[in-house]
Amino acid sequence: MFNIFSSVLFNKVILVSEILGLAGAFLVVIAWIFEVQQIVRARHSPLDWNFGILYLSGAVLLTAYALLINSPVFALLNLLAALMALFGLYYKWNEKRAAGSSVRKQKRGGRRK
Image (spheres, rainbow, N blue to C red):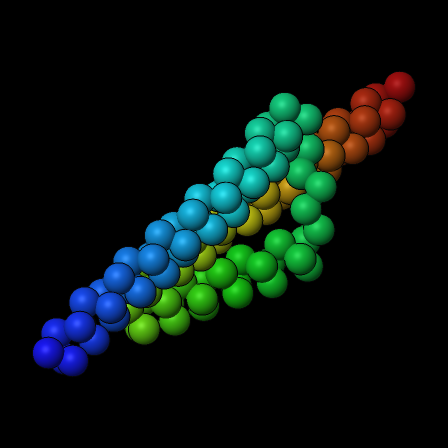
């Protein structure tokens, strides 16, 4: 009888932990969605290159770790966090490329005069 009770109790603890994990993951993803909306509206990513690259690398490694320990909630959260960081870095890269392009256009325009 103790084994049956122990098994039922253990399953309920796992269910509660999964619910807590999903709720936490949901809140983190919602926060990132608001940040991405600001990046798109402003057409500017305030993300620092060093932070973005380290964050992306860490999130990818944590996703791999979560898959290895069979934690789907943790894996999903870190995968989405990695994608959001990648999005911020992509926007940052496009800003830098566009700024370089406009500088080159200004230099070419200055030579023609």
